[in-house]
Image (cartoon, rainbow, N blue to C red; front, side):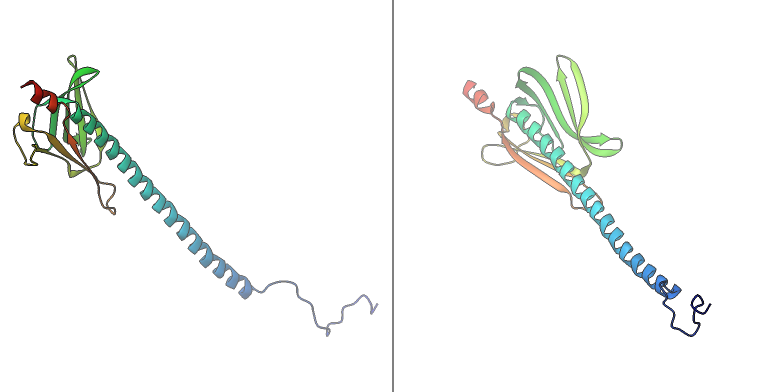
Length: 188
């Protein structure tokens, strides 16, 4: 019988962990997990902000390209206001186009209106503009600002988009010559 009985005085071989060891490991894993989760959340937030900036810049770029194309084809300009450009544009068909700083759902926006054969469509082209997010400067051949539409030879366009409260606004600018001015000058 002595073979089957354990000797109580012999050293025991424990294969488990103590409660203190388990608590220490859990604490270390909690700290490491918190650091990893914080890093991942920060990376996702940075990615969201970058995506917002890229979308805002693309929207402003497309709007600026469209305004530039219409200014080049303008014949004649109808206004010389700082936040409004209105012109008759000849591309395929004659249409009256205006770009102005307005609002869309209470937010500043670049609003485009087009009148083609008496059918007027108005829609926001870019939303999230800064309060001074659309500026037109009208200049003559000597780079002097003018107030008379017939004297305008170039239009300097600036579009500023607000991206978020923590980010700097994005400003895109262009300096566009009215192409049809040469035709007007040649005819007079």
